[in-house]
Length: 492
Image (cartoon, rainbow, N blue to C red; front, side, top):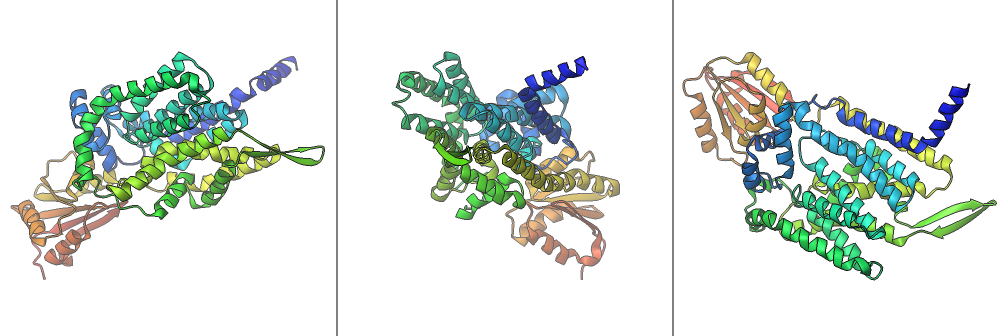
């Protein structure tokens, strides 16, 4: 009985620690579970290819080939040296950054509001399907969000205390942030705008804060030099590698809210809680009467600016210069979204209401999570290559459309069949025939691999050219389709 009482006392004493530990463990499980189950998809294959080069080559070519600064690929390079380039290995760093982000959003919620909102925001992030997807993706997005949280953690500490270590941490976080994603500049801009709005309140820190920005600019000079040719190319309409991005509409912003929620069933509840969180009013029931009080407007404004800048500035630039708005590029705004939604839940002083809302959101999130883990999300290149390798013969040739999707194909392919590619934008049937004729020379059969990046014109043209009677095999995988043509069958 004594030992049980001691255990009970210990649990009560460390209750907060145990709750955040359980939240982190839950988030960690969801990010590591089935981490290597799905195939490497197109963008992940590009990450691996980039990371296989030397650090100097990564630095020299990252922005030109990836539209991303080099930090993530350098990290992935050394990680692959130690742990290899398997699916599980290359995605593990993203999972680590995603797990640490849960703790950071909790700390920010505690510093801005209270421990209750910190715990709720950490829980919302831990079960976020959107964040889990990019914590299981060998791309820079999880690192980008982790560094955004780290930057805002130190920024908030700077606002509350005049400690040189906070300034140093802030400087380092911002440098790493922008060397991970160019959209990190929008994060820093939001902080500068907020600080400028309340400069009188923080006038004793103006010189230090300005010094940090000057130091950041100096640190960004190499990055700016690397980025200027690419920015000029995009601004001039020559950014072919981002030509797949459509011009956004106002519905694109609504879509961003939807992907943040992770599922249509969570869209309305989280959006309502988000807008409730924007109003710094809280009620309490004292002796049977409701009383209302205003909380800090500054904290609300900070989260609103944090949320708005990574979304609306790219949206405006997309309308003015060139399309660059993609919801996943705005992932740095996700923490502000969940912090405001958590504040909306914290608006209700009655803990029973809080528990009902949190449990309700958790139950609704199970729908999106179940779909994510049960259905394929990434292109099934491993399954495609296995299908071809099992049936391939020495006199076969492979044509891939679009040609740049050969990266994930070659990641898995271990055979020695000749592989040729047709460009995604090639619509001239003569050019298609030229590639196919080259592949067919001296061959018995022809494999055609079409991905979601491919052009239906190629598929239709080759079916008309060879005839449906020549099709030996046809199989569809997630976002990949495979044909096998017998070249000896006379076309109709």
